[in-house]
Image (cartoon, rainbow, N blue to C red; front, side, top):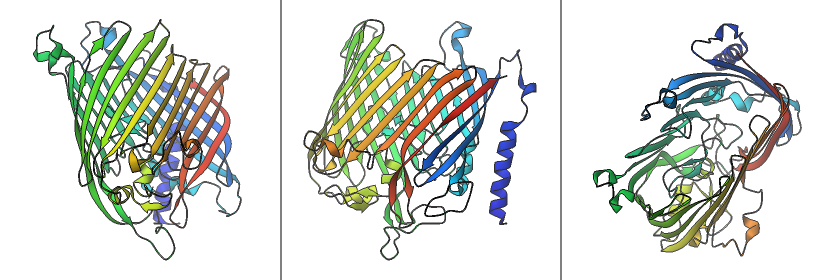
Length: 475
C-alpha cells in the first residue's frame, strides 16, 4: 500500500474516531457549552452508480462575547461559536458501466483538500450580528451591490472540496466584506470596504444618507489555456482536474455610491451606482434602484432594478455561481461551443459597447417562506441568466430550500428563448428538505445538479441525490 494511501486512510480513521468518541464528559453546565452528535444515512445515485450515503457528525456550540457590540446590556452582546465536524462517506452498492470495482467512492478522498471535508463548519456570530465569520462550504457570496461577485459558490463539483471562508464587519460608520475560495490552496480573493462619511456631518444633513464603497477581486491563477492531447478537450491530471497550460492573475476593482433617497417606517428607496474596471477587458457602469417595503407585520417585499453599460469586453457578475467551472471551461459568447477558460472567452469577444439590465424581486412571508427570482437579460453578446430561490422554515418541524441558476451566452433575450434558461442541462441546482418524524428522528433528502470531469477533459452536468433518515442528540 502506498504512503499516500496510508496517510489518507489514517486521517480518515482519526476523523471517524473523533466523531464517534464518547461525549459524556463534555456536558458542562457552567460554560453552557453544547455537544451535538448526529448522523444521516441515505441512498441515491451519482450519475450511473447508486451509493449508500453515511454521514456521522459532531458539533460543538459555545456562547461567545460579541465583538464590536455597542449595546450596554450584557445579554445583547453575546453570540455563539460553532465548530462542526463530519465524515461524509459514500459506499457504492450498485456498480454500473463503467465498472469501478471500489466500494468507497475514491473520488471523494483522492486530493489533499478533500480531507478537509471533515470540517463541516467553523462559524462565529450570525447574519444578524455586526461581526460574522464562517469557514467551510461557502455561498452564495455577494459583495456590495453584486456587480462583480454575485452568488458565488466554492463547491459545485462532485469530486472536489474546498474549505472556503467568508465574513463581514458591519458598523454604522462603515464595514468590510471578504471571502476566499479555499484556505488550503487559495486563488480567489474578494474584499469590499464601505464608509459613511455622513458621520462627519451634522445629524440633520442630507449627506448622512450617502455610503461610499470600494471593491477589489482577484483570481491569482486564472487559466488562459488548457493542455490538450489529441482529440481530447483537455488533459486530465492525477487529481481529476484539467491540466492548465498557461495562466495569469486577473483583477477587477470598482467604486460605488449609495444614496438613501427615501426612508420611512415601512418602506425605503435607495439609488446606487457602481463603476468597475476589469484589467485588460474593460469598464462597466451599473446604475440601479433598491426598494424595500413592509406590508403589515408578516410580509416584506424587496427588489433591485439595474441598468448596465458594458464597455469593450467587460462582463458583469464575472464571479457568478458557475465560476469554479467556467474559469476552466466557458462557452463562446456567439456559439454553444466551448471557447476555453472564461478569461480567454471574454478576451475573444468583439470589443464594443453593450447595454443590459438586471432585475430581482423577493417576497418574504414572516419567517416562514421566502421566494426570490432574478433575471439578467440582453447584455449584447454577454447573454442572459436566471436565478430562482425558495426556502421554507417551520423551525424544528420542517425545512426546505431550492436554488436554480442557468446561464445562456450569446445574443439572447429571455422573451425570445425562454427554453435556454428553463432547462436542467447546464444548470446549477441545489435542493434540500428535512422533516421531523418523532423525537430526534427525521427524514431528509438532497437533490443537486453539479459537475464531474470526464476522461476526455470535458465537464459534464450530472444529477446526484439521496434520501434517508437522520437522528441527533445533545449533551
